[in-house]
Image (cartoon, rainbow, N blue to C red):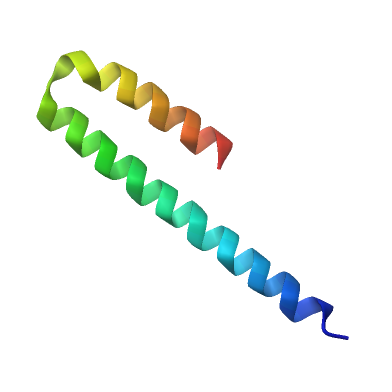
Length: 54
């Protein structure tokens, strides 16, 4: 019965990936705020899509 640990590892890796995506989207939002109002809308839309997907 080595199935539960494997599933736990997969779940842990998925949660780490989602945390990395959240961090990346946060950085993108900060960059968009710094770079200017023209790009912010596009970057915010992209980050929202990423958040919905994850």
